Structure formats: C-alpha cells, structure tokens
Image 1: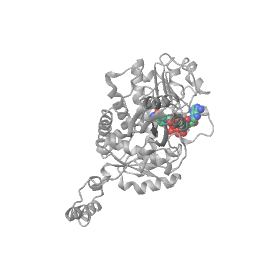
Image 2: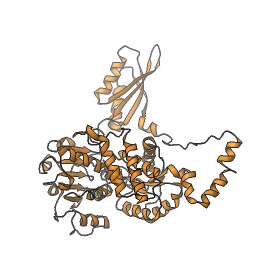
Image 3: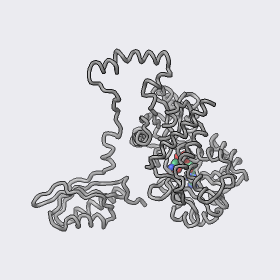
Image 4: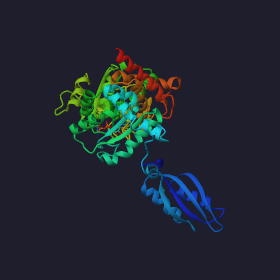
Length: 463
Ligand SMILES: NC(=O)c1ccc[n+]([C@@H]2O[C@H](COP(=O)([O-])OP(=O)(O)OC[C@H]3O[C@@H](n4cnc5c(N)ncnc54)[C@H](O)[C@@H]3O)[C@@H](O)[C@H]2O)c1
C-alpha cells in the first residue's frame, strides 16, 4: 500500500476564520486523515479572514481528495485551490540551454558566430578529433530512450518518457557537471534506433541508453558499441550492476565471507539481472543460479533467446532445475531484480548462515524487507524509505564524468568494476549491516567513481 511521501505532495490554499484555533483545526484535520503536514504558511491576513497554504505529503489522488474534503468540512473554511507540487516542478520542463559565452556586441557575435566560427568549422573538418576540443561534444551525453520500459510503468512511449529523461539529465549535471540531453525516439524498431543514434552521434561524447526493454536493449547496445567511437552504456543494465557489486562487496565484508565461497541466486534475467550476472561472474563466485518467471535457468530449457542461453551456459554449475524457492535453499546471497512478493521469511531461513538479501524490485521488493530481516544478516532494497538503498545515481554520473575526462571511446567490464570498487570504498570504516552503500547525496561518490573510471580508461588506452 502506498504511504505518504515527497513524491506526491500537495499545497491546499484555504480561506479560514482568523480565530486563535484556526491553525490547530486545519493541521489536525490534515493529520486525522493521514496527511503528513510539511508546511503551513499564512499568505494573506485580513480582519475577517486568513488565507493559508497547507502543504502535505499524501499517498494517492484519493488521499488528496480526503484531505481536501476534511479541510472543506471545517466550519468557516473554504478550499480555494489544490496544487500538486510534483506537477508544478515539471511545468515547462526541468532543463534549459544556456550559452557559456557572452554575446554583448558585434565583436562577440563575430567570434561566436559568423564570420569567426567558420575558421573553427574548417579546423574540425581538417581534424575531426578537434570536435572534442572545440565543441559541446567534449562534455555532452545523449540520454536515449524509445519509451518501451519506463520506470515500472512499461511501454508508455517516448513522449511520456521525457520527464524521466529530463530528470536523468538534471542528475548528470548536478552530480558530475555532465551536460546530458534527452533523446526520446519515436520508434521501437531495433534497426531504426541503431541507425538514428549513429546519425546523432557526432554531437555527443557518450550515449546513455535508458528504459529500453529487454531483450531488444542487448542488441541495440552491442551493435552501437561496435559502430560508434564513443562509449555506450545502458544504465538499467550497467548502472545497476555497478551499485549491486559495490553493495555486495561491502555486505560480504559485514558477514565475513569471500565471494569465491558464495552461492548467489539472481532472480530476474532481464536488463538488470543479466548485467549483474555478467559482472558477478568476473568475481568467480562458487556458483550463480539465475531464476526468471519460468523458474531456474538451465541449459536444458527450450526456447531461450541468445541472452538467456548465454546465462544458462555460464551459470548453474550443478544443473539445478525448479523454482526460486528451490534455488534459495543453501544460498549465501539473493539478488532480486524481478517482481514483487516472491518469497517470505521461511525461504530466507533455508539459506546458508548469515544470508545477504538484496530485494530490488520496485516499488515492491521480492520480499518485505522487514520480513527478510528476521533471518538475513544484511538486507538492501531499491527504496529510499529503508536503509541500504541500491540506487543507480551512485554510479552513472561519475561513470560518465570519468569517461568524458579520459575522452574514452568505449567502456568495458574493467571500468564497471573500477566504478563498483570506488562506490564501495567510499563507505570505508562507516560500514555496518545498515550502511553498505553511501548516501546518494554523499558528495565524495561521483568524484571517486569518476577518478576510478578515468584511470581505468586511460590505462586501457595506453595498454
Ligand atoms: N537500483 C534498483 O533498485 C533497480 C535497478 C534496476 C532494476 N530494478 C528493478 O528490478 C526489476 C527488473 O528490472 P529490469 O529492468 O531488469 O526488468 P526486465 O523486464 O528487463 O526483467 C524482468 C525479469 O524478471 C523476471 N520475472 C518476472 N516475474 C518473475 C517472477 N515471478 N519470478 C522470477 N522472475 C520473474 C522476468 O522473467 C525477467 O527476467 C524492476 O522491478 C526494476 O524496478 C531495481
């Protein structure tokens, strides 16, 4: 059930009597129907009335209506207007383009634009590499989506995906000074997406693929990596994998286990699960058992796509079959990027001693984290209202900062693992079962990730 949170915040403007009890009556009315009051502002005061803005976190549209009705029902109170603060934040979009150069007079104009700019164009025509020095390409990333797998909302299309891509671009700038721009494509055809991104590429020094459905996302990423001379990174895959690997390294420190001795169950073999499995295998765990909607993934299964076949061939050394519950028995680690409410405390009890449970399905995890805590030594989720939030924002801004600073032409698993180590290292001696990853607002994270990725990229170029 949704709970009131800042993602759904309303401001209700009311006319109220100027009595001594007005403030108490209004705030009590909001509290009685479960609204979480966050601000109370008297915006006008007259001899016979006051006008008040009451701001509260709510759980849903129905809950917002309940609050409005509760306020309207108070004697002498009339609701004038209800504003949704989330929508207000999105009015007119969240990004703008702002020139870095002054354009005050003819002299400025002649250098920024014609005729002076022509010589810069000619320099780039003579030496295309100069585009990275003399244009926005140096610091600009395309955030590319086809709108086919947006948040947990599914295939809502490119226009509806734009608020998410704008938010992503805002995070790139805020956390790492990267100029990212949304590129929402009105096609879900693999070939057309590849062709279009290739045609757009001259402007960008990197491509961040976002919210493109599996399995299409695997082919789009692989083919673009082949065809472009700039790094291509699918955040739903690799951003997640980086933060999961960072969290896992620290969780295993808490329970004092080595990854080489751990049996890991990964539930979900879509975008996130596949990338997690590939990076995890680089650390040589004792075994990985992948599970999807059809149960444990094994080589004897019919009708597997190339991605699932690769996973089947590289995991499940014992050739297990069966359900997620079967896979969990005796496992040291559970990593879920699949679906809500798949198991309970009784299955955690069947895992090895001091199990680690990452239940990352959003918004509702594979197991209620409170239930998981009954037997698990470390629990993480994707949610901000529990400790140990696995959030991609810990990775992608720093990853691209490092790639841009290195003028990298591609990205590989060594760079992803370097980023994961950097995220894990930021925790340092603050480590405990409720603090295996840093806060998303820890200002040390993005520079640490950027430096790790830059060094790995530079080492690769030299090597
Ligand atoms: N940082 C995070 O917390 C984070 C990051 C990425 C994804 N996620 C979450 O992980 C989930 C999957 O994301 P995705 O982009 O990989 O989706 P996806 O659609 O690409 O893959 C979903 C996978 O889950 C499997 N699945 C579905 N129902 C299942 C069930 N009942 N039992 C076992 N497996 C089941 C599917 O077979 C598929 O392999 C989503 O809930 C997403 O929000 C969280």
